[in-house]
Figure 1 (cartoon, rainbow, N blue to C red):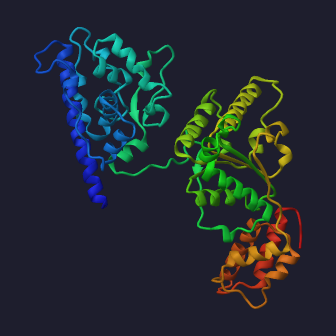
Figure 2: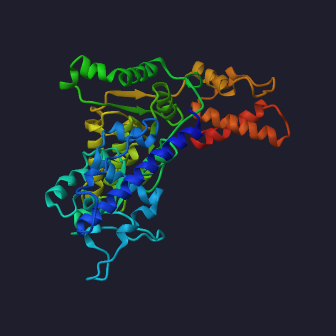
Figure 3: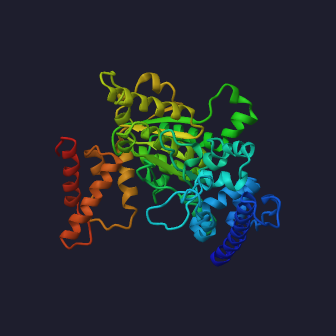
Length: 450
């Protein structure tokens, strides 16, 4: 199906749903104020039959949303699609001189129209029916797809404020899916301390010891056959869901790249947690940000990759101050979410000794990424240069591999420096001296010399 046809299907479905929303709002207001009305109930407005080829229709079908859920979802979407659809709710109460409290709503900084709150949804569905009002509270609980699948974006309630006073919005993902048909992949932000990582490389570019590849194969098999093991073979009663692996070893030995390639092989997105952004100075924000990452990862079956994990675990200190206590609480929360996560979590560290033994025992795999040996370094040199980069005749990969103990990451840095050095000489070939200069720079980082 062409992009234009997809957009047309999406547009028609949303058009019908908005017209239905307007009819429901008009009927609700007329019934509430006992005005002349052709209908006895909002439920006489049958929701439109949606084309399953539209993204909005597919979403409604996927979650089996009925009248009430569709009304809440469209009220939240309306400001993005047709803000004037909610203008009927801007009328003022003649007695108080302000808007009707039961209509809810809040004022945006720039937007001039009516922005809904959960109170708005409660009014449209329940009117003044308290029993019905109580029933729809479940729409805003964590176990409802609106929240658990992040379809809606519900604001925080103020201290001692009513639950329904929270703003009612939609996630960026929901807007993009329903309008342009794109499944949004979240990126790093203040409230989302994770970033999707990819690579154009493949397993042939990564040289790992056989025992490492064997452990990686086990993780891959778990991803492919978890449901068989847990459900088909009935082992869910003794095996916890999910898989936890610790990758440890010197920098540049392929820990991050292995996680990325594992995701590419199994068709899963890999998200790296930015540990520097995990612990917030605001109490409770850390747990909230991490919960956002883990909740989405559960729904979308991501692989979560925690790089330099010891940087976070080192925060487990003696509680000599309130800051220490909060840090320990945050780490305890993270460890609990990792242990309960039903997907794959990979933690990476340069020093295994920095990981607490009690926690390390909870991992299914402890994978040691050692420095490559001579043969592996030779393969890394050749794989990195892939035959397209021109080398002088004085360059000998085997000699470089035998003389200099470098990781794969360090070898790539050497080649980058060598390429720049050659270009500075206005030469289209890399010489041995260019590479040796790069080797010198890399060894200096580790306090070594040629």
